[in-house]
Image (cartoon, rainbow, N blue to C red):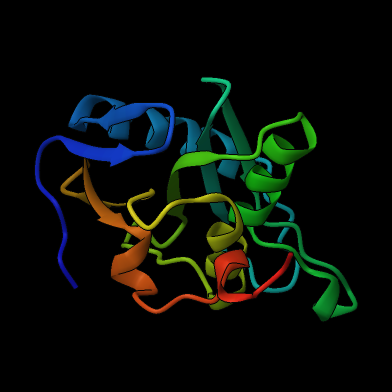
Length: 157
Ligand SMILES: [Zn+2]
């Protein structure tokens, strides 16, 4: 998988959003803050996410587990659904962090939700803590799902 160094550009129909190292760090810091609210009595594995949406705002989320395990929701989807429920229809970037302090890629279900609202060049920011220094690495959605299924895959009139 190709990680990206430095500035990462994601183009959309209306805007050219630049995700640089500074913004990646800011989003990851907000994801870490959101992780503090994780509800994880079963796995004790906390995840936080921060989403940059088309309105320019950042929406955060944490994983929320449930005694009925299938009702659990990931941090990424929590954050994305918050953004969508506020009227956004486009997501530019998702930063993900976890209590493992290692790269925590999104699960398949979250990737599928990202496909609905992100372009191929939408940015996924993973982080790791190395000797107490937070290092962010940027990927595109296409790095994870090069042949995604999304609305253009269907011939809807
Ligand atoms: Zn997930």
